[in-house]
Image (cartoon, rainbow, N blue to C red; front, top):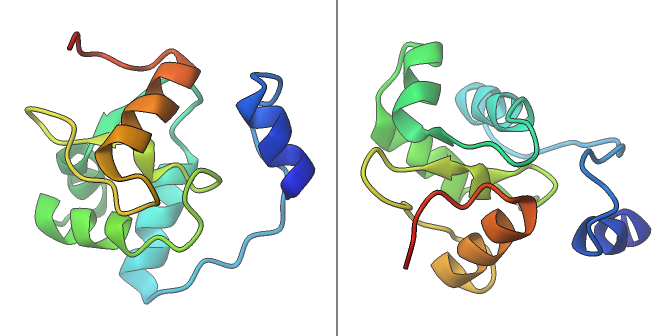
Length: 110
């Protein structure tokens, strides 16, 4: 994991190849799978994931916030309908912006 994270931060890795066992109930697991399907450099919204799961945006946001494997399970690629949304990983929203910029998926001008 450490070598793959180093390669990701160097811009040399776009897809992680690690055995993952995310924590959570069936809904949280489904949200994790949806996040893993978001390609590098792209984003989606809490609402789009919710629509795909037959749910609402707030539970998806809660599941993203409960993600215990951030970056590798890319919760930073999930945005609010009008804005960035939150980021519970270390560094908060500022880190989310850094990760989106690293991937070329930052859709907002500051």
